[in-house]
Length: 214
Image 1 (spheres, rainbow, N blue to C red):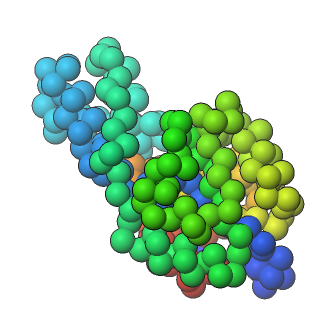
Image 2 (image 1 turned 45 degrees about the horizontal axis):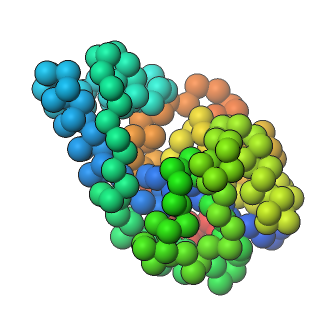
């Protein structure tokens, strides 16, 4: 971890912690597995081929599943939220952080985000939910971050954004003046950092590591 990038003064000024949802709070492995299987069936290719190509695209900083769908010229399979599960450390992380900070969500999600968070049992730890479907604007558009900060009554410099996507989470949050933490989970972990504006203040591989930072 690159802990020295956060000074003590900055840490004392943090009031809000904003999280992405997919591959940040929720494990989407089963959903991707099912999507890759359906892509393979629709395109009449092997699942191994689909996964290999998806990872290749991710390593080239593209959205792997969508790039493979475009490559094979098939219809995009539906995203099956019912197969998402919480990471094992999600609830403990939110419970601990909510005792020291306000917690928010900034996520590209279909309608029903709050309902899903209730079903996961973690809504009680979250103070503000800003999801793309309900707001009519999606990351990386800066407006969704502005909406979240306005609802929170928080200045960008007093907030941290935690997410798995460099393009959707880290780059726009940095431009807003927020602190950033890249969590290398899910397909987003394959992103290759090419320049300074893609670098998060911290890089972690699980939510449990946040206790050493926040």
